[in-house]
Image (tube, rainbow, N blue to C red):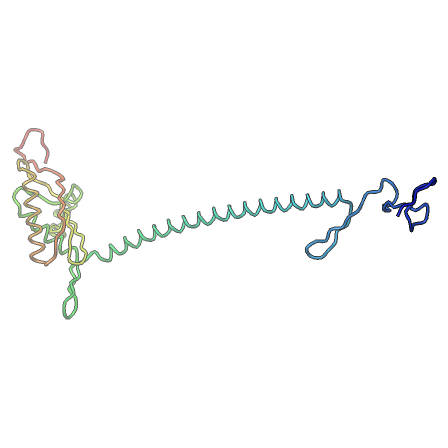
Length: 236
């Protein structure tokens, strides 16, 4: 209750001369505040200082998050590169394994009731070479290098060594065979009929003698034998 009169106003119950303004210290002093952190600690200081500290903390937190994002991105790149390296290594090991298996399986092994019968590729090559030489128009087998070494063997008395399989290669897998024959034909013959006849006799001989299935016979006509009385300027 406020009394009014000729003198100054004052609040009932309060001695004269006391002010109702909150005591904040001397004029110009900065107000203080306290902040309690999540761990229970208390930070005190002016409101401006606390706001500045909070801004600094937020800025540092943003920088930490950005660095963490960069680290995650780098880790993802590293994982991707590692995956690519693993794929390449697997592909390389697969090629090596295929090559090894191909070498190990380059033979015909026929299971029977009391053991196995194994046929080496040299056997197929000799049979195919002998059969191919029986075709009219086939002068010789093998390329230039093979025929050169064969002539050297003839001179030293080893002409029959490897002669039968000269110019022939075979690849066996189980009961199947792929054969390649390199030919030298005589001048004047029709080449395609000769090669077809060679293909036919080679297949018949190998399948009849070895009970294998010949899936391919690839023929390479490497040269033509020209007799001495042939066209002028022709070389044998």
